[in-house]
Length: 441
Image (cartoon, rainbow, N blue to C red; front, side, top):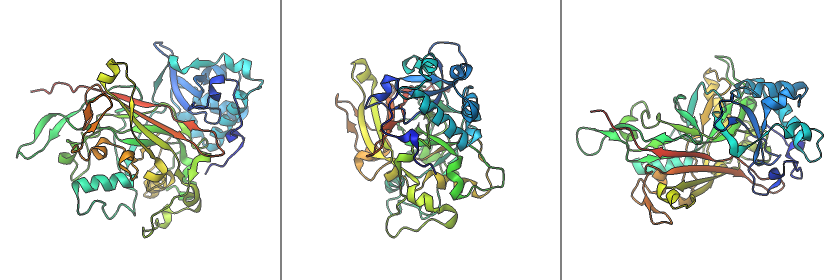
């Protein structure tokens, strides 16, 4: 599990002036990675590192000899069209690259003249997914979400008895995971109301799900579990994740095997991956409520108990088409905290996923599941916020929403802030709803 080092020093400042702004997501203490190219160009996608409003073009920096030793090998691995090669190198390589960049980007660094020519404004960049995602698993770690949704559908038994013993998850599809900014089309599917025969058409109860995406670094061999004590070494980093959901399609299809068309039409991943090392100042204890069972031994690690949770503030914002046309900005719907919302830690997800022998690979993605807090203003979905659509919310411009409308843009934001540490953020995760395709007769 990552420990504090010189890269976390809150006093560090960068020669990139925008990185020193108090409200920036990307100070020198963060240094997240993405895959980008200049907007509108036919350039090859390549790895980059955020610093203030700029991106360090790693391919350009490697070509100019900005790194040496282990950092040079890591930068070369990150300079391609995905971060998978870097992810496969492991924590020592990731840390070497981070340290080298931190030292090169500090005020007074001798590398300033070299790296200045490698900067690309983020405003001029297009992004693709940070990794080739071979496998995607969606977990259900948000206990408040699970309880609230359970009450809507099972008032007498909202939380199933296995929830507090086993990290619940299912294998999803990776083909329709898209990078932030990519529109998401309203899905078609079957719905079942009171009539005997189901209906086919566009979902009328389209929703978002506020999640974190955990990207796997080094994998494991088939049949070889990852112990809880080693699990964090296999986690590369974290990005914001919106796992869109069609709430009216799901109830009809999810039994007996789980959600299908209600989930597979699209999921949105933010481009910037904040490394586990960058999150070291923002870890928190895993605290179970009094009377809850303690994890089984394979899910119970001393370090994980002490620092396994993530203290990340999560915001959900909405901008409707009408607001956009009127020049009005997005409005915040909710604010919560991942550490308060999640019942299981990222390390526990890795340990459980592999305990039966499943092999993980660099770039695999875990969704945390919807991260809702205990309060109504901390809901991670409209399903909870509107009590299943029974209590529509009224926006400042007078519009109401039970679920998402065509043209709505949903924005997720995340940040970490703690005394004695520099605030860092995750950048936005955005998606706009497009109308459904006309169903074929």
